[in-house]
Amino acid sequence: MLDANIRKILMQVRDEAADDGIQATLKLHHEKSHLMRIGNNSVSLNTSENLMRLDVEVTEGKKQGSQTYLGAIKDVDMIRGILNAAKDKARMASPKTYDPIPDEVEITISEDNQFDQELSDIDPSVKAGAYREIIESLGGQYNFSGSWSSGSIEVYLLTTANRNEVYHRGTDQLFSVVLKHPQAKWELTDNQTGWRALDFSVEKTIDVLSKLIPVYEENDGFRVEPGEYTVIFGPSAVSEIIGMAVFTGLAGRGWEEKQSWTTKYKPGEKILGDEISIVDDPTNPETFMFGFDMSGRKRDIFPLVEDGELMNLMYDSATAAKYGKKPTGHNIGSTSIVMDTGFGPPDPLEAVRDMGKVLYIPALHYMNIPSRSKGLFTGSSRFNAVLVEDGKITSPIFSSRVTDSFQNVLGNVKVISSVSESVNESNTYERRAPVAMSVPSYIITEGVKITDSANSF
Image (tube, rainbow, N blue to C red; front, top):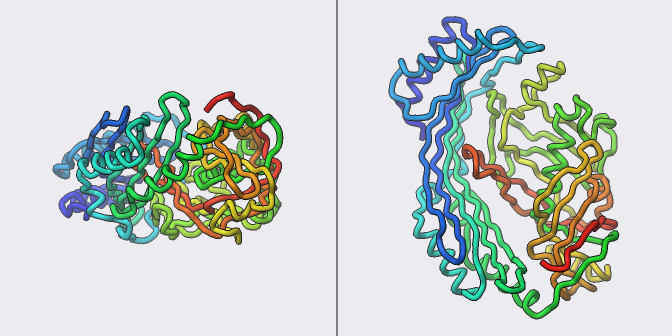
């Protein structure tokens, strides 16, 4: 739990600032992080961090200033100094063209129902041992690489608008391994996520990869000619498509600035297929649940798309202030995007038994947006992709590029899995801010455009 002395210090400075008529927000972020990387079948990086950050923001009319401190919090005078530095920056700042909406902790919240001490304190030898077991089980003749990030965060937030406070503590992990054939160059991968140490299983990764190895070892690669295909998108691909569609089409700023692919639509109008429903649901346990945003607003279930119709747009405080809208609890990186499941069988091969030739693309690599306004995305199959004929896997496929629109891919969905899966979307290069989506374990879409295919893996 949050150190009682740190809480007392921050509350005292908050109260003093409020009594002086200062409009301020104090955000504490504490993380314990560990990262292990594997390269050439051995540990190539083993590093840990234990960091405390305090962000203080002061608003004076249309001016705002902020100061970030990294290090141990020792006494009240130190925090007063950080607050004064933010005040000085606010006075010297250029005024905004709008009146900022004040941060306000709406209700007191304290949450740690996704915290696991065992994962927070996991010993690096456990990770190294897991990678060793995977390599020895699948064969040292392959080249193994990967990474395993794990850790815990504490977030504590106060504002001078009132005496409420919010606190969040949680743990998370993202495991990945890549198996590469040294001569043929094909690559297989597996990922695992969760907030508990026991969410990870060596046996699961071994099972997934051991079933794919014979497919790649015993069959030549199939080159997919450019054209339109029926495609099974696996959970990683689904999360990548949905995630990019949401943040390029359902964020208020892009919509207001006429840059998003939904700009020509209004709430209530059809933007995707009838089968598609998407919400931001901070109560879904397959995501990393965060009950408040960084402005102190309580986060509730927030419908985005329902039966293909646009329901709402996400507005952070700055965008809401600029365009005269109400903030929606989205001053946050840790959204909980959830796509509803359907009625398809758990096994995607059963779902395509009568569909002839189908491409199975579990993940999309190096996704990008050639045209944001048209909702056009592109990405390569690369890992674990196979050709399926009449419900049976017949061969691996060479690296194939999908270039298509969100509205085509999510407008021609024929089958959606009845099973959901958690997919970790966290960025391990900045401060720890775990993000996970809950998506169907597969979707099957017709008429997906394959625009290019390599002659190799």
